[in-house]
Structures are given as C-alpha cells and as structure tokens.
Image (tube, rainbow, N blue to C red):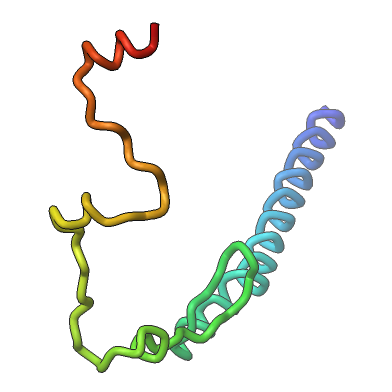
Length: 104
C-alpha cells in the first residue's frame, strides 16, 4: 500500500514539473518573441521574424520619384522592338533547304 502512495505522489510531482516547465516556456516565448513583435507593429513598423528586428517602412514615392497616387508607366515591347539592334549578330534569312545544302 505504501508503494502505491509513493507512485501516485511521484506521478503527481512529474505532472506538476511538466506543467511548470511548459508554463515557463510559454512565458519566455511571449517575452522574447510576441511582445517585441506587437510593440513594433503598434508603432507602425515592420517586424521580421527571420532577423527578429523592427524596421521602419519606406515611403514608396521617395524611391520611385513619382508623385503620390501616380500610376506606374509600363513600357510594353512593340513590334518595332524586333528590328532594334542589341549588338548581337542577326541570323541569315535563308530557306531550310538552302541552309542544309550549304552545310554539306
């Protein structure tokens, strides 16, 4: 009977120890990871989980030299772009039959 009481007491202490270690782990995680992230986001910063750093966002018109709200101008390639020279030699326009006979 005495060994049963010791076993139950030992299991209780182990469960209590696991609970205390898990609780301390959660508190440490919150203090080291969650609280700095929340402070950063509350101040309007961007939080990086990879570097655990708070950075200030950059106003995009300062980088692009555009006025606020001005749309981006995309210069799409046109048919005239095929004729533009980029410094590489142009391929010869030969039919396939004459190109095959020239290589023999």
